[in-house]
Length: 252
Image (cartoon, rainbow, N blue to C red; front, side):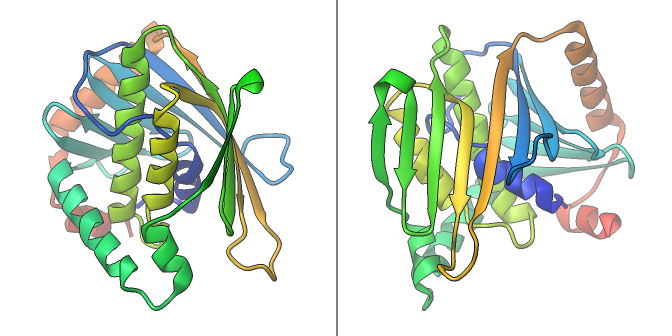
């Protein structure tokens, strides 16, 4: 369902600060850009809109929109091209991720077992507001910001964790979410959210590492954003609702 580029985005852009919870709502937008290697121009852009406790995730260049409704415990995924909608309960996502972790912990492959229960060496550079997390096969360098309104941090965190878990369910070949979630827990101690994330991945010492960077800008909602939200809600109500398996088949 998600393109490979979206899997990359979710691997580094969905770095949160706390575990999901229903909190007081703030209205805002986070603009995201992802860079691969030494690219000067972003390989992808997305916008995540937070409005009245509901989160709307729009990835440029794709017809798909994710709507996360924490109070209802549900994801709505709509496709503007096919005119289809599918709903996935958060509980189903969490059950899948729990089973995925159990299976990974029993794997014969050491890297898969590590990904099921990852450990990082942590360094904090307070003068730069930068958190660095390193392991044998990957390293994160995160620039952090602390919004004045703590509900912004909490809402962003809840969505980031939730959509990371969702990606593990809906995206074939997606990396397990547990390294991301471990990074999230580390960030939680600083009560912040990321403004920039650099990630180095090197699963094999005999291969060149992959370098990724994402940039995140926190801004206020605009009238145009509110119109996008209105349209997304309209389509969520008017599109044909199908089971997730049927939704996937229709997009192949």
